[in-house]
Image (cartoon, rainbow, N blue to C red; front, side):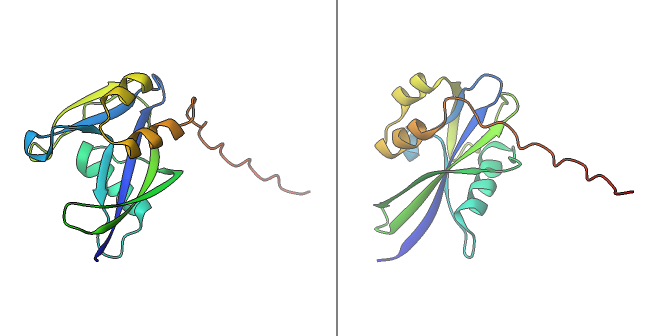
Length: 148
């Protein structure tokens, strides 16, 4: 069986704590989900998460943080897929630039609302792992003092 590596990316707004969900087109099942996508040859799940976030929304996060949730499933092409979940923080809610071949709608939703929209248990499990408060940005390193 062929293997595939995928990334799932939850984009959260720091100001509102809402998460971004995208709706797949009718041809792709018309379900709501976070950003997902396959890693390209030689790409890590983290690298795929950064690339997919930009490809599917037009916004590239400064970083993605692993949620510690990795799961496996067999997809419709009968590949053994390993999917790793990440979080990215956006400073404000933005309007994603959707590819109409993949997605036809988006919404920023509170966690409870988002949970009700999700079709897959693996998405709900990852959503439940998001911390109640987004992590604080890393502090800048203190300036070193010069000795006399």
